[in-house]
Image (cartoon, rainbow, N blue to C red):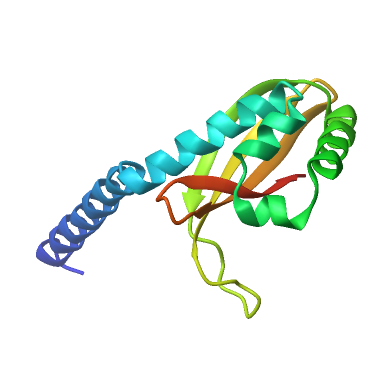
Length: 145
């Protein structure tokens, strides 16, 4: 390969890297994703405090239709007993969910965090949010692994 070809390849690689780097902040600054992430953190504050009734009331209608407040409060208590209090939470990603045949109609986002709990050094919290008719993002699913 001659010097001209090497220079051209280096320039193309640099342009590709610059384009990819520019795309990442654009995704991170998507207002819809920022609002969904803020809604998630607000809901997690209630869950972190062990506030089953509060987190239930702040969840999406679909969440509340799936279980009673008492069932949710007991499930949250059991989950948090296994993990202990939250010590540190690091944001990972906001993304659309993987499409499946079972995906209900609606607008959804998945928000993930790497979380350190008192009884578990590293866990992944995955929250699914649904944008409801009033335009607000609310938690419809919560999983800790």
